[in-house]
View 1 (cartoon, rainbow, N blue to C red):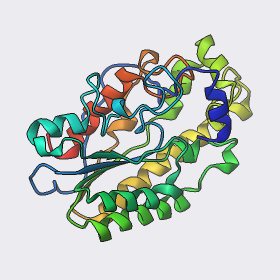
View 2 (view 1 turned 60 degrees about the vertical axis):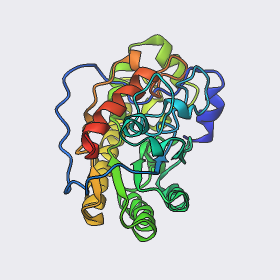
View 3 (view 1 turned 180 degrees about the vertical axis):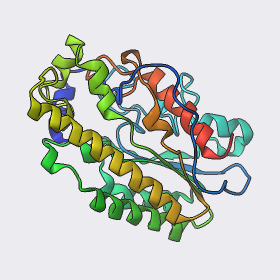
Length: 282
């Protein structure tokens, strides 16, 4: 998230990413061949504030224990918790390198950390901050995004060629605006600089504001196209979630009540469920 978000965060609730309506999303359609069977002994989580569990502990800060991927808390049935049930030797070997504000440009550095951990299962959720900029002109171009994702995946493939990799789609940020722009508390929070490219002037129906939101929606869809293609190019050790996270229909009770942007505990749990079904371990 841009620095303005962090400043805003001091006044808000917790970035409860991706709000959408609850109910009936389609079953995930993961792509790629299932990786070889076996439970990992070490895992690593890469990405941004969503995977860092930002604002899921009632404060505007990272709360990794609630991460959908590597969390070890009791309130989210994370990938780590599910894998730990299968392999007790995994205990204490789930490393979370996700950081709030991270964009795809930083993915390679996080991947290097995962290689140092000797991770044999790596989750990747990146892209929301590439779209959430001060204005639409500052959004990361889709081609640049792809290059940066490819760079991160190359680091993993070279350093941990036998590791399983799960690449997760970018949540439907536009749905957050759809379900939140009629909620006065959310609109007030967003005015402090939460994802301004999408959420600035949230109640405006002016053509230029509608067009701006559509550009953010389209850019996120383009990022997901590139994530799918990057995972396919990686090979059989990579699985894409088939757009499962993007299809999640979050409701406002699944985002925090501080910045009305990031997932709360319930939202993190929903992410854990849909990504687990796409992981190849289920």
